[in-house]
View 1 (tube, rainbow, N blue to C red):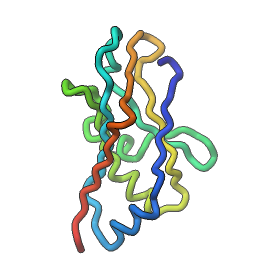
View 2: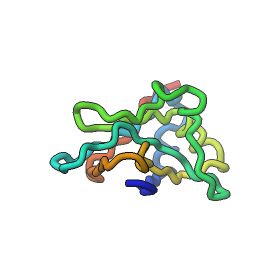
View 3: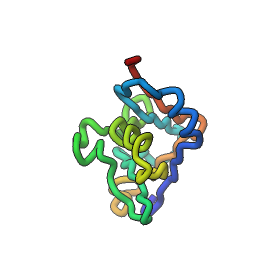
View 4: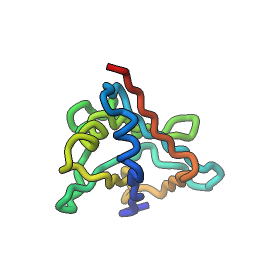
Length: 132
């Protein structure tokens, strides 16, 4: 996976905006499930980054402000990766400067032969909100 990245795009932001309008967003997570059975072990950690309007790749504010333990991306025993993207998601809904283009990158790809196969049918976005 050296240099490989997976593009992740929100396809219906208008619908999501309508559902959470006037509500407080408490937590937003993205969970990715892997396909097992490969001879290579999955990566211990993945990164989720965003593309700016200028085409630059940057870390999400959830990672840069809250830190790695808050953000997630570590492979779990149940075969999943989970990312806390609450700050990014609120900014995406409220700031036109934020793009909906995210990329999943492997860590340590140049130094190991791990291979992570994501089951695209088992990507979940969980939005927890509170009525105001």
